[in-house]
Image (tube, rainbow, N blue to C red; front, side, top):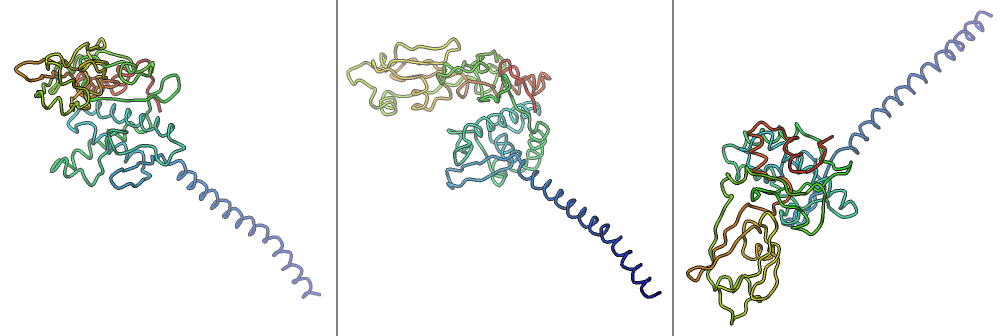
Length: 318
């Protein structure tokens, strides 16, 4: 009888403990599953860009901070003020996000070719660029990039096309005059700081034969060189939109490309059998002036104030 009693008691205790054991094991499984799910979600949410390198013909998925660091290092001098570097980082990130949205159905978001997207320099090439200052400049730019991580420029809640250039002519250019498309936030604004910058005004000289070679197909051999360039049309800021070369119509940007001028804001004179091109600014002139951004930073302006000056009626937000 005692034996039966003890067996019954043992079975009862086991039955009582089993649910607790199963429950505890179940909780461990659920906790582990939650932990794994969390890690997976974090991985899926990682901010990356697909970058195409035309030299290697490879596409690399890159963390946003690494890509933006490479862009800022390539696009803006490391000696520039911290707030200017921050402004550049936000503009570069916004530009990248805009193109990622635009190219979501394509193989890659951006290219390392500055003629197609933004300039980019890999970390392994920094030593060649900066020499003994590599560690110092790397730290400075990475700090600026991380301090504005995830900040974007928006207009009416939409990510903008945040283009930028090195030096304006004293006023930035309205986008419609350069690319024929109107963006309400890419309007002409004053950037007087650029006029005092090194490289604001340049001159380049060509012989008659050089012009004939570089603009082959547009030159009328019977025309007098002094009459080659005529009927030049410019914007309010001085950017050449259209001109005639021996009665052939050309865009100012076409002449700039053929002659490798620093901008399309130029005048041309003919003297002593030579053409003298006087060029103002550097780049297309639309959006933020990098030189202007640095000058504003020296005056104590924040990266947000800089960006709001160059991108009209925009918000800077995470």
